Length: 374
Image: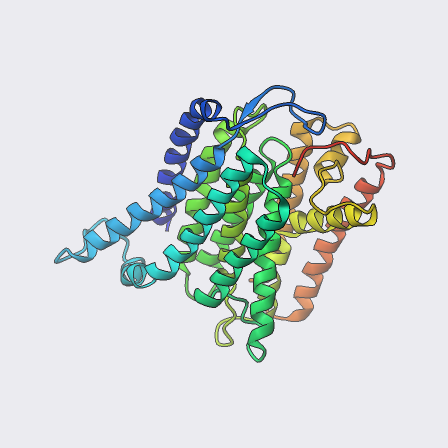
């Protein structure tokens, strides 16, 4: 299993480190640069386009992986270094390549739209329209949907579309401080990959592999994005990350009556509780103040922590630790046998969110029109 983890994570990490480093020099030359302004947290012009490094690392690593599998299956015998536990699943990598590249193709469309948004600041309505079209394509064409509501497939499909769109915007909203969105994505991807490899009756190698590749890409990007950031991922990276997380969580929590209990469907809500709570609270605050839900401000959890006196790195670390705490609760859902135990875990998650709410409520005089666009 360690061989599999390293084979997925390390190439993506190396590609992301190199490609993001190149983008640090190329981005300013093509106009991908985020300049300080009244609603910005950073104080120096910073290149954008780090999302190119994340996207490229995922695409190239997946393509290389498929080429390696194709080559291995054409050999008379598999090499001795290939782990026995992985061998039976190699044909499935090629058999499922259609769905795999549909996911990556949809992610590429969002990535390209994000690049245009980074450069030209597109209006939010057409962006939302494209996000819904992408989500519908994944659900209806790729058949990627929540299966808890099997007796009501239309409801499952609708919730799946909403889930994907919400996560796309959640990770976009979270991209408001150095290493915040990418760090949360890294934590969530590693937790879900661990669950896919150890928490199910049969390891889900393909979904786990994609999550590990995504994690490696984010880790490589974070080499350049850790405070003080030398480059931002931009909308291209955050939207691609959000779509990948939304899609892979749907694939990874497939409900099967013969192998799992229904309460595992709550796992994504637990692992992603902090970003989901932050998005919902920010949107409600903006709507209550009569503003667009996409109007930038400092209502985010990270901004509230800095208003309480924490430095930006410590605020980001606090959000990361909160995410890890709720994520470990999601892991436990795969280890408990009944709803009684699951309810106790959910209660723990709600307690963590209550602490977050109390900390946010301590900031009573947050300015309405200051903050970083998110």
